[in-house]
Length: 150
Image (cartoon, rainbow, N blue to C red; front, side):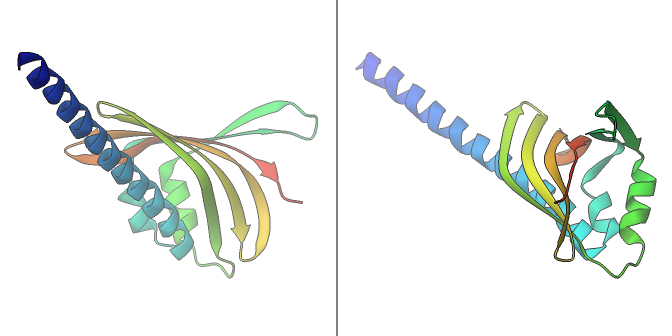
């Protein structure tokens, strides 16, 4: 009888942990989706709600001489670029999203293709790190790779 109670408790604990992890992954994914929806809509306020005030933004790429480069951006100029009216729509489409969570830290890795209207501008991989503060997930760091379109 004692053994069955112990096994039952372990199984219920595992199920509860699994459901909790699934809910957290869904919450992280919702923040990421809101970030890209804000870009698509040109809504910098929507994007700003998803990021930590000290968010870091980086891009890695190879220059014309095939030398690895790293460029940084600050959140203010990024948000300004989103809010600036333009003729073409920015549409960053993500796929193959993998999310890992430990305590209040999450990492999300995803493929992306960036379109200006229907023109494929570039593609690569996004690596996001998020933190959970006061019950909310916020993007703390983004690094992306960049391969230019065809």
